[in-house]
Length: 542
Image 1 (cartoon, rainbow, N blue to C red):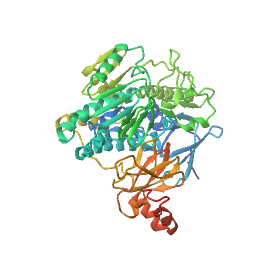
Image 2: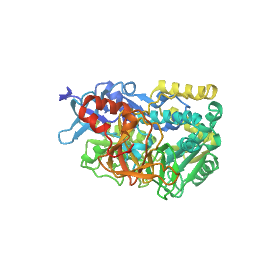
Image 3: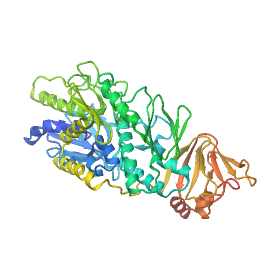
């Protein structure tokens, strides 16, 4: 373990996380750091910040993938940046333990003031299959994979002849009627038909469908009762789009490779289920002795300081900062920016012996883009519709991007895309070559008799039925029932034949999906594994 060398004469401010809160903390404290009055250290597992407000435009090719990213070393020029994963926070010793990604080697850094900007993580407990079978938009890697997946669906639909499979490929399900879900659904409903008409001549454009699922009565709960006309305007555009199907009072019950299963029992055939259903605060917060709100965020006082502490400050998705109306700041960028700035002001006041200043920001505005150069927005209480709302949103984005280079590149993307069209490159980043967990619901076919097989499956939980077509065209014949510990699909991998039977989930079943390359590598490395994988647990169970 390595301990950073400290200069005891300088107060040390350590920021955990490189989000917008830390960026504006740094902007406020950078002059003190430059004059050597404090030391400022920022720790983040990534050396970039991902701006999620631009995700829908990146998914649909309006901007290049790198336009989402801000390089943290360009942002924190007067600070020490440490690229590592935060492992532990010791408040008694005023130490932070973090590790590097290469081999897990650990490092320690001590602090005088600690700023928490840890963000949030994906909530995988919302419904079964969310981890295995949804496209998620939290990490940059997942966002990039989703972009390429969407293009791949168009490529596959252009060559597919089976109408059932075409329906799966052209059905896109978006879970969540919040800002993120509505923006993604609206952009997809604008992008997919437009690009299909121009570039994919064999795709039936009228079959493209984006289903937006929301558990509440109405979409965009963020607008609440404060801007009912804005919400009504957004609802009219969403429901009036012929390629969007809006389903309210509905939730996803589970997600599988081929279907979105709803709590109503309805099953939507789809190979593209996008989860915009929410996140939870970083698990690190649970190791700290501070009060938290119902969503798990640390409750602060009006100075953005964790309740009960004199040296721990918080901002962004991990902080419940009180507003003047008695509510807490929502987990949005503008609130992270302003609470980060206020925390910095009060850290400076603490170090210089001045009075702390309470947080008084009540909001500047917000926007929800709705595709085709339209948005529902409000600025200082003034509602803006359509193009005016969209242009105000673009103005907000350019104003708050922290790096001038990124402002210029983004502006260039916006100017070029209408002239030269959208980028449709698919790098096949979604393709798995190893072992991945998958899940199926009762009655779903896992493999089908006669299909080309490139993988085998190992059952973790549940039961499956092995079925063969009846010669007289009647119901399929049950050959075997397999359960946890059994496997199937080995003939397709080791003998190079088509699937000799259909395997159907009898119960909800969790499996390990082993691609051919991985299965062959495992069998080559061990005669025992080769014997077990290549043998069939039941006759005709392939």
